[in-house]
Image 1 (cartoon, helix red, strand yellow):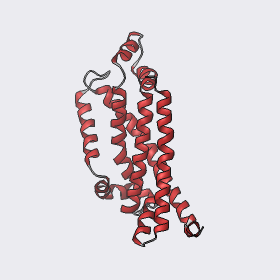
Image 2 (cartoon, one colour):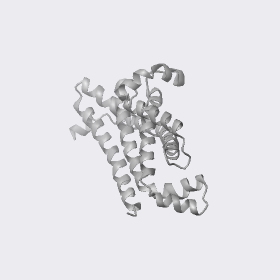
Image 3 (cartoon, helix red, strand yellow):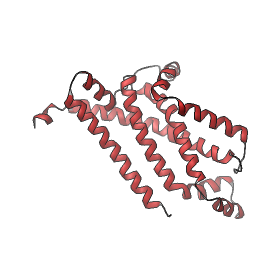
Amino acid sequence: MDFLSQIPKEQLLKGIFDTLYMMVVSGIFVFVIGLSLGVVLYLTEEGGLKENKSLNRAISGTINVLRSIPYVILIVIMVPLTKLITGKILGANAAIPTLVFAMSPFFARVIHMALREVSSGVIEAARSMGASTWQIITKFLFPEAKPAIISGITITSVTLLANTAVAGIAIAAGGLGGIAQQAYESFDSVTMWSATILLTLIVFAIQIPGDYISRKIDKR
């Protein structure tokens, strides 16, 4: 009971809100941008429905470069752009552009690999029925790749959560990661462990349903 009475409930609730705020807002951009880039990569690769080697190399190269930059370094590099977009270099809003730039390439590659798992026979069958490119994507590719896409969304969401913790420490973005860091520096073990446990619970809340849904819809 003494332990529970020491937990700063209001501070942790604010931390949960900030963490989820960063995740949801940046996640919307990440999933839209990443999905679009992943589909374009698939369509324009060699032998793809809309083969375009130059465009494919340009997008793939950009994705590889962005993915190779550690998130903390990306935060520093993006300070001028972050200030231009948000008017700030610190706080939760300042973290959102960096999260989008860090995670969109990751999710794009996840989508690309998920689509490549679809059997070429499915594509040929769709073509033989006279399906348009849009119909092939929406009615054949996405349904067939759904388990891998759901799994990719789960992995991306967990990684996004981890990066919000880094942002909380690096640019005072708040959230549970920032609270844990501040508590560590002030030797407040109760708050530090409370924030860490909450982060772990959020991971479980994402991972367990995501894995279950992916297995449930997997026809293989």
